[in-house]
Length: 166
Image (cartoon, rainbow, N blue to C red):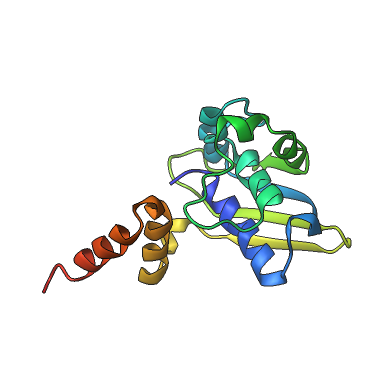
């Protein structure tokens, strides 16, 4: 689990719940605890490796590509870190660290504030992901997207796994 996951989930929720595409968001404010900022400190990554540890890059990718299929990986490559579209999208994302917030391992709730192009402001508090889990069908869909290159073999593998107890 990455420290940017909560802000990514919160942004996706705002987009999905309000029918908003990337161009409908003027700016994002991400309010995170110190620990999240410590383990994902790169504000302006220049490589895929840094992008994987950038809270801004994770949300900027949503402002470029919209709600992604899972697993969400397109924002975390060398090319994406330097792509002018992602660089411009990062400028629309501000990370604010909670002063005096918990600086221990683990993730507190995080807050995502979207200022929309029409001036509306939507705030979402995202509970720690430990409190939530993906339902089985969503986990299977994530797996399908991950092994897409296997073609029909992926479905065979899912079938075998789902019937292990038989």
